[in-house]
Length: 269
Image 1: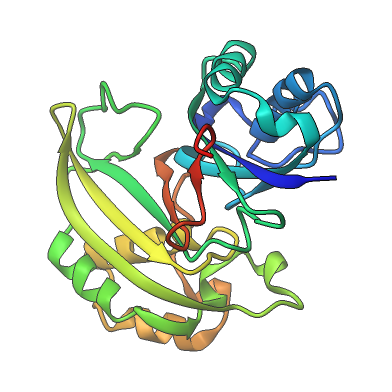
Image 2: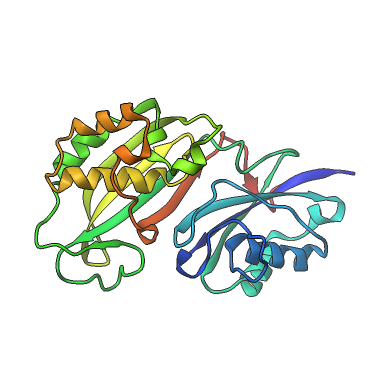
C-alpha cells in the first residue's frame, strides 16, 4: 500500500493541559489526546502520533510538529479541508497552523535537527497584564542583571553534559550529553510590557532542562552568584547543584528545524 507521512503544525496554550503526551488515565486532558481524537474522526481509524518534543504541563507552543503515517486514499484528501476540520474539532486553546506531507518513514522527532524555545519572565511589583499566564512573574523590588545572565549563559554553549540541568529521576540510564547552540538573555517588549527573554536552541533537550537553565541564570541575575559559577554547576553533574526549575507557564516551544525539503505543503504534488 502506498504510504507517506502527514505532518501537522500546531500551537497551543498549555495552561489547561497536563502536558503534550497522553496519560494512562484518558480523563486527563492532554494536547496529544485532543489532536488524536480529531484525526481519528477525520481519518476514521486509529492513529499513532509522534511529536517533535514533549512539553510538560503548563508549557505553551507556537510550532509543535506531529507526524503520522497515512495510506491509500488518505493521500488524496484536500489539505484545506483537513485543516478546517481539525480547527473545528479541536478546542480553542489549540491552533492548527499548517499541514505538510513528508516521505514514508519521516519522524517529527527523529528527523528534527534542532529545537527552539523562548522563556519569558517579568520582574517587579506590578503584575503582568496581557502576558499573564505566559510569563514567570518574579515579584521583586530589584531588577535582574541581564548582562550578567547573558555572560553566564555563553559559558554553557557547546556539546556538554547537562546532567545538572535536568530532572534527576529522568537522567537515569540515558546520555545527558546535549549540544546547546544558543542561550541568549535579553530585554524584550511584547504587547507593551517589558520582559526578560531567554532564547534557547539545541539539538535536543533533557527533561526540565530549559527551565533549570533559566532558574540557574536567575541566581546570577540576582547577584547571588558570579557568572563563572554556572561552570561549577555543569561540572558537578548533580541536579542539586543548580538553581530552581523556573515555572512552566513562562516557557514556549517556538520552532523546529528540519532538513531542507523534508516538508512540503500537503496539497503540493
